[in-house]
Image (cartoon, rainbow, N blue to C red):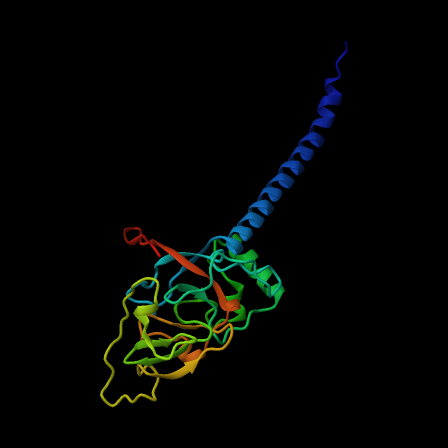
Length: 252
């Protein structure tokens, strides 16, 4: 049978271009699928965060790396105000990643753009924190001390909680699921109780879907004492472990 090498050579460049287009299409398809899987895992299962301040000393320090999960309390259904049922409700003593009380989520288009930019920059650049909210934090790590219906107060940097239906206050350590340490530094003698970071908070009764969160570093933390209570929608997830520095690896 006769062969036509000239014809074969004539069509080979077109075959190469077609193969190149297929490979490029496959590459972008793989990237797209990885992006979708990452967003699903990040939204529903595991989220990594860097600690940016010392408000949770002695438990957490600057540059610590932690993992939290929205799954415990129930993740939010994307682009809605509804939640998928979780395994448990937020509890006293839980360390959570949350939005500050003053934080207003950006528009959906900004959120989507931010997720895309963070994905392709390996979480190093955020549109929200650098452009949309350059002077505000988009998340913070605090400890829950007051639940809906509780009455809370602070004296000498210690929180006291009167659960709904009770007639007396408990020391915060009596109600927490796990023991934890708090930290505070003595203030100047002329520092009065009406000044910030004084270690005193007047009685406050929490309403439905209101949580009082606070840092363990009591006079080095901005929290519910300053920007008010948070709600379930503000809680991004429960902290489950600290993985860096590795020598301090710890489950929570």
